[in-house]
Length: 186
Image (cartoon, rainbow, N blue to C red):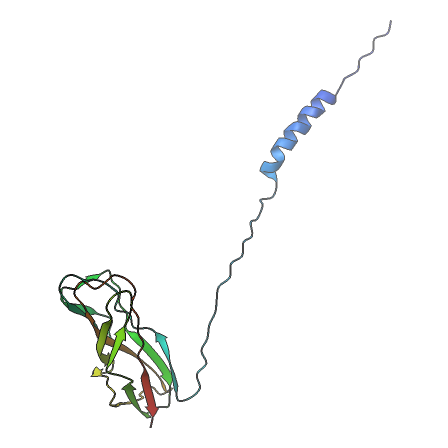
């Protein structure tokens, strides 16, 4: 009688195949996630004898009381207060302007008005006593103040601060106003 001996390799192969399929994700090449984002880019190209606003004047966050007071923002960015006003946070930033003239050229700088009004949800507030951050600092008014451009390239920049009058029990909210700076190149 003859016996037949056969091996059935299929269960063994199935086990190896299943093991290989389970390990495949672990040994496969890592997947790379790709994301994109967009950002803006800006440039200002100046023509000679021009200037522009770099940033606005901000008196920062303030807390009024039942007593009127003031907030003064110096051209160097420091803030002080009087009366019943409390300064909140580190806010406050002088206006900043920059421009292009020519070396040693004289410039007259003047203010459109010595006083502006900030309007908002409550009684309007007055901003006054505008000061330019020059060396030495100088008060700006409707009468021109004369400066000389000292940069060999003709570029310049200057900050402007002011004093804000805050009323007693001033209503909370955002207040805004505009002021005009005029430069005359001589």
